[in-house]
Amino acid sequence: MKTALRPMSLGEILDAAIRLYRRNFWLFVSVIALVEIPFLLVQVVLPLVYPPTGPDDIFSARWFLVNGANLLVRWIFVDGFGAALLTYAIAQRYLDQETSLVDVYRRLGAAWLGVATILVFFPPVLLALFVWLNIPCIGWLTAGGVFIFVAMGIMPFAPTAIMVEGQSGLGAVLRAWDLGRRRFFWIIAFNIVLTLFGWALAAGPSLVVNSLLVALIANGFGMTEQQLTNIYSLISNVSGTLFNMLFLPIQVGAWTLTYYDLRVRSEAFDLALLVTEDTQAANRLVHLPPLEKWLSGNDMAALMLVSLVVFVLFIVTNALPFFLLLAAVAAEL
Image 1 (cartoon, rainbow, N blue to C red):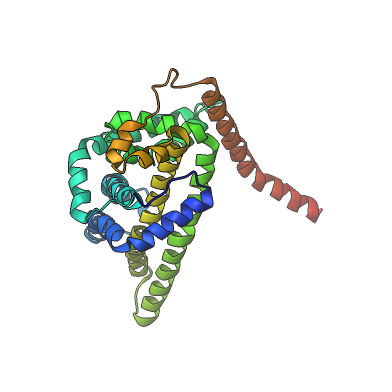
Image 2: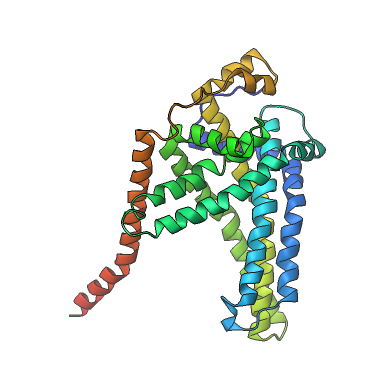
């Protein structure tokens, strides 16, 4: 076993994920490219079949159809099966295990039911939390923390528990919660940094490419405003998908390495790998004992604290324009 696992800082995890990506670029991009194809086809074909009718098209039946189809296909193929495939490929290469594109898809064939389970499980949970969040007072002060930790501390790690440890769908959710809550605030901070990092690497360049291409087309061809809008939408979708395909292995890699970091800190998984170089044997050798309480007093306090921070930020961001306006009026007087 060449990989020597140890507890890592946030910067070390990002650095290790990027280096792993560079060494295995073609494997990781090939894995995600195959599942991006259905998403890319939907993004290209649907706007051509059902083109926008004008500026008032937003929130129309066509708008809901196109965006709903994009969201559904992305959730299933990219965020679901694509992330699961990448997780397994990254985990294998991180632990210096030989694997190929065929091996990765063969593993998904054995674990697809667990992945499909969490794909069905999470949307209604998030919807219920969103509804709860809009309940005055009690929802404002409790739901925000739960929503954020489900999105940042459970959803990213559930595919790893399925693909690497062979957990069932709901078992993976509980496993991710069990590990993630041990570094509650660190994981939230880590995902915020990772999100900002993703915007810098994917969203920023995509916006620049979109603007340049549309400007070139507008100057080279006499097109109406509606035609330019349609072309911009098409270019935006395609370039966004391509840049996301390049960034997603880094994001999933960071999540996967964080999962192992949690196992090293909580279960001494690094010591298990010193005993046996068989990763499956190491998985069986160490495992957290069953929890006596799935929701402890510390967990509830952490969730409520995050909910309170979200509530305060919401109040501040909504009140800030009002106070700025008052300040401007006072300055004029």
